[in-house]
Length: 407
Image 1 (cartoon, rainbow, N blue to C red):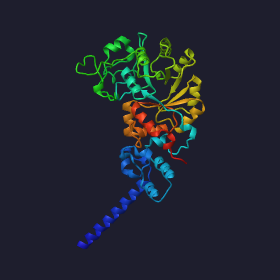
Image 2: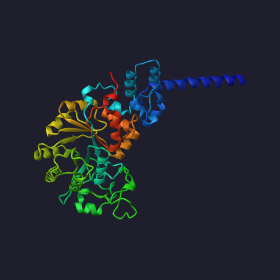
Image 3: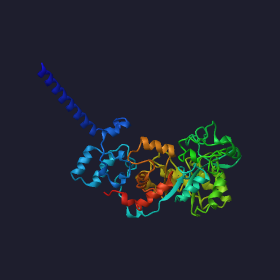
Image 4: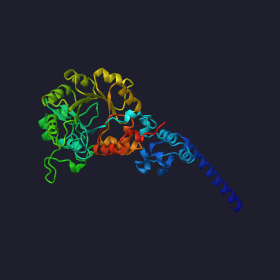
């Protein structure tokens, strides 16, 4: 009886081991996309000491590669072939999505200067779309800033983003904690009545940098109000830390903003500093009618149409502005071949945090590794939330070609 039990237990143990090995072997060769996102760490294992320099700047938990590839490296497979295979097998790789895992880049493509634009200023050090945020970006080494404008019912342009996305921008519920839209106010009412939600995650600077008019305890001057565009342009034009070559990219966020924006810039004689962009490309046409020499950018969101070059040229845009994870090498080259400059724009702090946690596991949240990866696409401008980190990335890179694997 005892021997029968022992034989049965031995058989069960061997059978379980065989099944377990079969499952592991199957998973190691199975497409990770077939499993839930949060299972992927269990399907791969890490050997961070064997990473390439471009990935080694990422957090250790992102050093993901399959057992098969690691074994091939031990067997002497060429590093470039390994790099290509390892990145292409990662379904959550930004480098793979941008097609920059094995891009042959010409020597002359590495020498152009990268233009750094502060997205809504420097939103991790000061409240976005305020003069303080824009000055912080300039002091961090940015070549310019991007800001969002709406035309209010009083006829004034204000600098504000708001909730609602690109289809219905300017909503106040998340930004200010009340219902309605920025379009419901005059500029004077917006400055006097609206206060910012200190605990809104989109405000990367944190609550201690956000002031209200009655914040007696705050050591900061009260700067967290909705600024007019004229106030911002005047402040930047006169500030000692802002170079005369500084670029101010005015995104025409709300309706009927093109004509008054161009007129205000002309009134202040700031045509050399100001440029225009919009997701609504008809506003670019309006700008070009008033100022044929204005630099304009056609913004694209997650979906980039196949004929994006033709669309840009049709409205007279000088630049194409891609969302950071859509500026593939091929798209960037197509734009440059058509005479268009290129810019990669990054989502706000809350959106970038979502992407960091759920989408791309080969880079951090707007860290040096992420910026280097996007730079490998060949894009000429970067509109970022962390201009200080971007400056470090450029200093480390020096030339993009130093971080590109060769074929």
